[in-house]
Image (tube, rainbow, N blue to C red; front, top):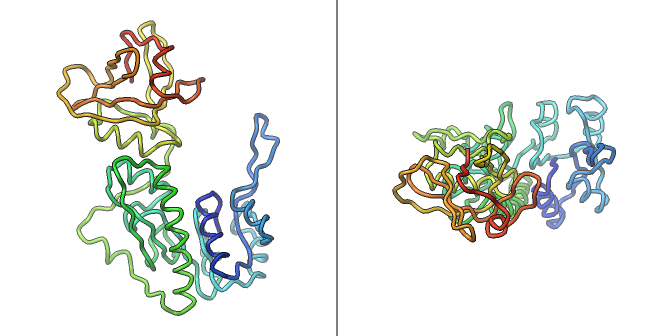
Length: 313
């Protein structure tokens, strides 16, 4: 069960390992285009169709027609990767249960956006976890974990791709352990200790706004890379003539230094450097996108920008 490209890697790994995949469950086709008159299949569906796998696309997971079709597959085990929260009637159906792949080291970063939040929070390590589903989100007994370092140059895309491949291997290993009766699982409560749990809630547009007054230079840098390339951190560019426009930031660097100007103040040489003041240093913007324009290196952006007395809010 899954929808995006992240789940395709696990499905491909299961087939490559010789597992008997009896069917695939994914989201209904999504309307796309200017008039929403074209339906686009999920990445998982496209892969499944190409490989001749049966596909179910329920609107509602408690729908009796869907449940009946799922029962007819008579699966021994269900694997969930980047899908929706399942009702008990679904996850309790197979005789060996249902397990989920999560892109974090549970119990930390439970939620919809674990990769983004781990980077935003400046973590130096993340990983993948497989766990049995139960009644609450991301709280089931852990079967397997693999760790992955986060370099200071990584962003959400590079970590996503790394965990996608790592997760695919973890899914195959978990299936093999369960099939062989070796799936010793551990309650998440035993791993918490004295550490406070960090959540990974769904990210919305307002989540992505860079709040210059609240962040230090390193925090702003982590915020940008944790949201790059999608959905992308943004700020409001305010020019001297009162015009405002959204500016997305995809790539940046930072330096710590004493500043005596308000956070959000812009400093530029007009050619290759565009820096934003923060309370303890500067964020150097390297790749940006102004609303209505294409994504571009800051050098190209500066060639057409009028930034005298402008600032970011």
